Length: 279
Length: 265
Image (cartoon, rainbow over all chains, first blue to last red; front, side, top):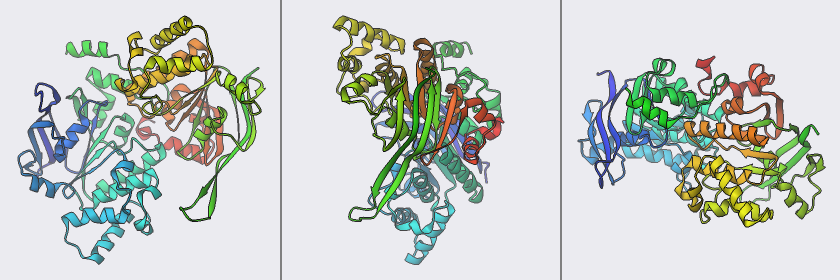
């Protein structure tokens, strides 16, 4: 078994209409097996597009080139049927807004069942056992199986999304800002849950966020993106404590710290451009 | 007059029916005997999880929500017994900045009209004077004078929040209620808006009531903090003291859930 579960090399995403306009510009990074890699960046930096490229869920108007090796197979080259078999089964994804990614007219039990049925051949009783198991895994009372999404709180809905993602024991979980819409206390619970599940189920994670506080809590490796390019990558300690790139430094200064010692400094983009031009 | 606003034992109950046909009713205490004082020129932050009643508190102070019980005095005058025209006048002194910069600007109005509307409602000045005010204010919040001719959808989230701030400040209010003004924004934009709010406070001598669930922002902007839970005030005090020496277990729990706290301390 290789050490990296996901190897992305020279990934480019561009518009079909104007191929000069690169939204993701030749990026390469790896996700180590059993570890969490965080992609950090502002909105528009291309972090979500990178995640969607791995899932092969990009919009029809976008094209991509490059290599995405997942467990040794290149996801950019396999046909749509084989990627469909991997999606949800080997690679699962959770999204930012648990309110909009659940179907409001179906019970949560049914929605978890759906993801199980697509990839597995289970009998009715096996299904029920597994659904119970999954709900307990994300610390939701199994009695809630017949509840509808609107009967749950935001944090509970995100737990249901996680249960659905866990249904087939994926090797890789892609989490696109899963806690941004949540309260701090609930956010802490969800991060804790994801970290536990990662260890318990021997899973790797690609985690997208714009919050360096979250990064400090959950990441092993960090990739910092700015305007479609990777400006810095490395292990979490070196990126957070010894940032080398001017953009990483500037972004870190925007993050309010709990100690309140440093002053918040908004990014001065003119200065940043000059600093970046000089490297 | 030391306090700009004093609120005494505010209570507000919401009655909820369970299900469409059911007659069973549950009452929720959104505000349960809440008292607070805001001194002139400071920033008071109200912190709590969703459902803690912090937004109801903000809305009841500006009388967008009528409370069931309690007293509110603004600048020494009883605020609750005002009739509608007097209320309108007082509201000139209390303005609000909302959380969602996408939802709080009318998509069919140009920025010019969005900013002129409060001035027209309160019959401020002549046409020329109003125009002067609008142009000065839009520059002050970091936008340009030709932006006045645009519609809200032409702006980014951070820019829209700037417009929301400009609209709130154009009437030169004394108290500004900020209901999670930076929660929907990216960190880099968040830092810009926090710095803008701080410098505007110095310049205009504003008092802020700042509602948020993000304790890290509180640390950077607030002088005093009120921690709320389930409609009650759990703890209140100076920001530094609460952060260094939280008394209740709930505040401790809130502080412990700040992302990144384990590694920074």
